[in-house]
Amino acid sequence: MLHALSLGLVLALLWWLMSGYFIPFVLSLGVASVIATVLISRRMDVIDHEGQPLHLSWKIGFYWAWLLKEIFKSAVDVSKVILKRKMPIHPAMVPIKATQRTEMGHVIYANSITLTPGTITVTLENGDMMIHALTREAAEGLLTGDMDRRVTAIEGVGALDRLLAAKAASKGDAP
Amino acid sequence: MVALIVDVLSWALILGGGAFCVIGAVGMLRMPDVFTRMHAAGVVDTAGLGLILIGLMLQAGFTLVMVKLALILVFVLYTSPMSTHALAQSAVSTGVQPLLADGANNQKDKEDEPSKT
Image (cartoon, rainbow over all chains, first blue to last red):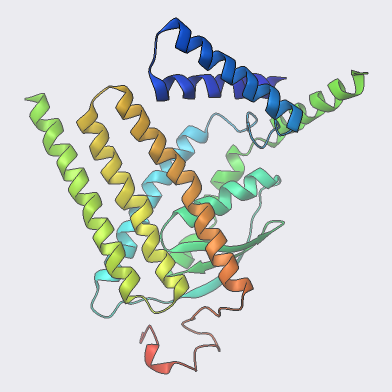
């Protein structure tokens, strides 16, 4: 129920921001399409903690800011490598073990790695990752585990457990 | 005065983003194999696109256009790692061997040896 409400809210906000209309008739069309979308998603059973990750810690805002800074820093590093006459690259495949406990945490970590230029997640299976690193510095930066710790801090395992328990309880009560 | 500062800042960001795009394109031409080329492409769709969009947001001011530009940035930041990962994984699973600096699988094209360090 919480997830459905959150989906409806996000859809309504998105609809309004994309259209920018205030005319009552058009607004009512928007409301109708949001309700229809939520109902269809509910029928398809795709409204869950993966589509609406409400359990993630509110600190994810700080994580985004940190990640954007890291992306910019490594983009500058990769650009320097490209522009150097001899291109001092040192490509390597680095195995990494993710310490997050949920699949969502693994995906956030893997995507953060891929998003920073210089490192790409090639395979991901149950927290075991193979990372292709462009330079030695990129591989070393990854092996410090700084990003891994930060993702683990925002993954919100306790909140997810509570949400899943509440969902299981409400499903058990329903006829 | 404020308008002038915002204008200068936004043009600096747009030009900086454009520079990252050009550098990424040069990198895609210079890099030796598919994986290293992906790293160069990563510069374009993070720093290049990000700086251009932030510069355009400053040009738009506090309007709905700014929100739409921000949404483009968010969607690209979510989708581009997905596509890069899909590309890398399909390259590996179809048997493309990455060129490694200290690996065994780069003897076949010695002249393309990337690093002499």
